[in-house]
Length: 165
Image 1 (cartoon, one colour):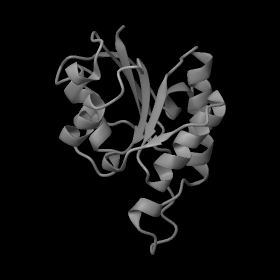
Image 2 (cartoon, rainbow, N blue to C red; image 1 turned 60 degrees about the vertical axis):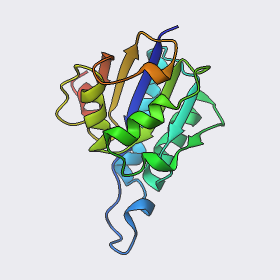
Image 3 (cartoon, helix red, strand yellow; image 1 turned 180 degrees about the vertical axis):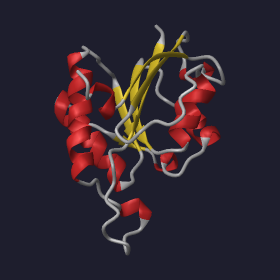
Image 4 (tube, rainbow, N blue to C red; image 1 turned 120 degrees about the vertical axis):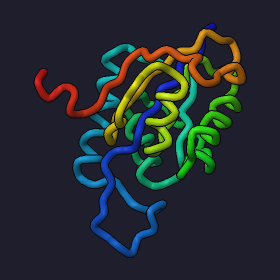
């Protein structure tokens, strides 16, 4: 069974409180609108998944929770190393995913996520905007096989993408 990885960048964060550590920054109003909107879009596509993995940073957690709500799922696995991770660390997280899960949604941050999408597939994405999503598929039974250039871009979607619709 092929593996599918959906990378979701957290929603827009609130910079209002300068004293907050980056890790603790919440979503702002737009982030709180975009995240459920993107989750809804995913539901409407008929997209299904087996596992949600998220950075424990507040803005990623909140984004993941909106998706969990849309799918009526309770379990989000938090992975410390996703926060502030570069491609090598993120690839390690992907390689360590449970093979019982064929489709995984991962919530995290830029620039790591944009770099990872470009490294694993021919996505050539300049930037994954906040609440943007990139789905890639891999022709493997095991996440351990995922490496540079082995993925195929299935779709790239983000909030402003559908303003014209």
